[in-house]
Image (cartoon, rainbow, N blue to C red; front, top):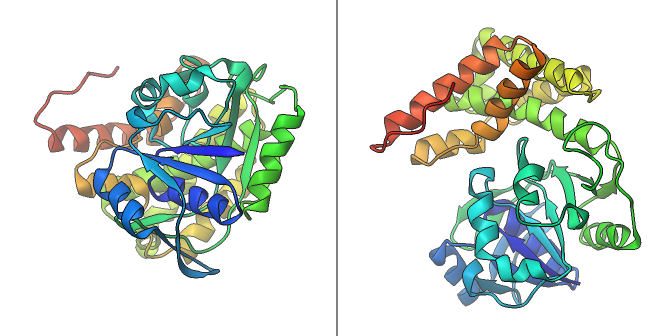
Length: 323
């Protein structure tokens, strides 16, 4: 199987490196020229619980320069870059390739469907951790899982009801052979919403406070606010027809605060670097769907507004006004 990673940051490189180690033909597509050149010159340095090594033999390219259609395109770009990224590889999408989105937040299926036939899209989520330690260097410690399901028929919410064909099962086998713990899961939207609740709480709280995850426990307000946001998001999920598990999500957040003490979530990293964040597809989508369903989400909405203000402060260019 010929696999392309569209978005070869920390997660794209982790997946691409492990797939290449398992014998798959892998292409890393990204616009970070220094990162690509480091991998091209010295291989990908990958640090995991299995050791520190360099992985060679992968193709690396800017998306617009690659011409070989993959059998599977795994999408790891930030959701705000989805349209531009898929436009850049439009010639590759004319082939009957499958496209798997493992992006954060909500609305990714709708965005990908503007470029790809929904019959060829797999929607999913992953809990694998990864950090970019420098050009061509990725660290990942601890385990994770992938849950995925065909997008066709899922309607973007609720229980997926797509058809699982032999291609989907083969993709799961390929990912499992690389040690990525993939499950073909008809309840994938439950997993997606639970991850959204986790991210809406921890990512946005850390982004506005500047705290690492563990520092949220330094005052009682931190964990309390995180629990409140989780409860709000779970209420929206249930109003949307998804039976998300509040207790499991609360437990995941509590575990992260207790055990991932020095971790800086990606949204905080983006704020510190002056980059746009994924707030719109996480808290923003939750607030929009909450309003449509008549569900109050005051804490989630407040954090959304605060992150928007931070982004405006960091930019000299006026941003679009949101309701």
